[in-house]
Image 1: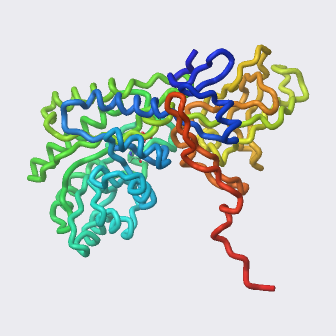
Image 2: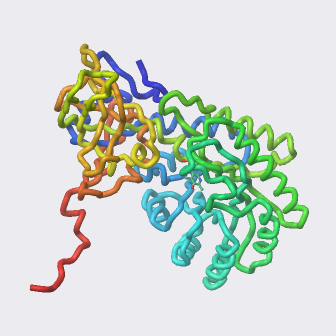
Image 3: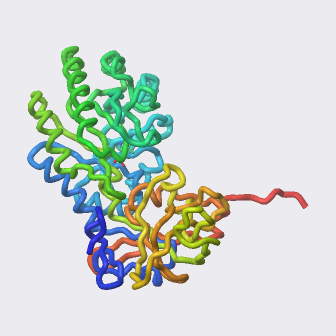
Length: 433
Ligand SMILES: *Cc1c(COP(=O)(O)O)cnc(C)c1O
């Protein structure tokens, strides 16, 4: 029986497996909290995009902020994938993973001069520029080092992606991109600046999008702009349709990547733009359902009233060793993530709040969840492959979790658990007696 949205995660008998590895066994071997990823799931997710794009010039650029472990980057790089980065730190990661800079696009609203210089030195494919000021600065930086920066402008199509306000990015009120009505003027400016070469146009309207509609709206508006820009003699080589496709956490039913891309391409072809290079920047949809966070049940703390009492007496708590510092999504976005036992018990489930050890009431992973578990056993938070480890912090001086990659019956430790001494390595006592 596999779990919703996660074909590589399934019970075999009583034991929860990821591919051919038991999660309880991995937890005992590597300790908890532990992130575990299915390499097969990641590659299958990428293949959905690739199938729809086959036969035309294209590049899928994995938005690595979703999960930036070097082994994850390597997995996608070996499959021919490009990368979407948003910082100089991410640039160093892709280089360390052996990625060709010619497959890297640099996004983000606040690139520094130093980040631009480094990206120009290594030769990234394109800068996705988000403001007029950034155009001026990038041109200066490029000219000063005798280089030319290839640029695409991120246009804000002002469409509502219908998602959580914190992860919606394509509305006028967002900090992202260049307003639709200023875009043509910005392209004229870009074409006139000495250090720049216009190569494309991009949008990214938000994250965890469950419908094709907002993409199609954004695409139509982008194609209108492309026609207006080219009418002014500025050629646009590639169309970058961003990322944002949602995954199944509970009962969401987003289109498959293949279906989404196919309908977007049909619209592109119908409007006579089928000759252009096509790019996408998926993050969550490539890795989200490929990962789980495994955690040990430390304490069961029963509420004072009978379970389900309508009088609303105190809750049952399941206190686990993973916390908001390991997985921020529930605390930050009130995100609902499925939580299951790594070993099924033939016992009635108890409804409880699954919480971590951090000293914050916001430190919960799930509320009112039916679970049949004992202390010392393991639970798994599903769909934790995206925006899990990359958003982890050291709050409460908690070392970050270890990470494991699984393929079939093989499992590799791809990141060591962080030790306490590493957490204050760069700190200094005052030189006072
Ligand atoms: C975060 C981000 C993405 C990826 O978003 P997902 O929702 O994870 O697919 C793509 N492009 C840009 C510019 C981003 O900031």
